[in-house]
Image (cartoon, rainbow, N blue to C red; front, side, top):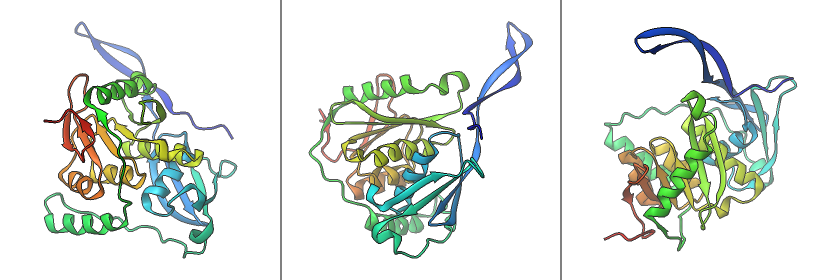
Length: 270
């Protein structure tokens, strides 16, 4: 069965010099991916096809279904029966756990401070504390943001993807991914390093969109000390970063950035 493509073409009308002209446009593909854990359906994610194995690995890490690559017995794409399905089988102690139920969506209003504090307490107890003497300069972070832009091969023709890039202590790009969803892009980038056994090398996660609570949680679960996003973090994400020992930077643009949570890792702060 032929693998699904990440982009597609469609008929469009473009306005140029006051005249609408027929043409062809490229758009990003969005399809559902079902993730099975230990033989049972666990979640369905809307994603851009490609890197599905890494997406499933990163997703399972973020969900707390696994803690390390050793907890993965196998990850297999079910292309023969359905290209939009990946089966994850856990190993070791995790394999002896009860098969996890399908998660119940939790909806929390942004105005609900009590719910937010309860959620922070619950998540913070399950996050590893990030301890490292890694430091980075503002100029180096700007350079990492520019590097991620260069890696966005699908965004240039479609304008419809998010991206995530993971960098090591000397600023080398370890892993990057694009997807229609910002959560998926980060899971793919993290999952690739997790499967390769190199996740502990990551020091900075650069994100193309805003850093929400869920995005901060994924970075913290991966043990990455710095999260830098093109847009703003949310108040709940900042609180999580403070609790988890995560450095959080927002509005990472061409020549500007804003540090929201330092944790002693950004050089040159007054």
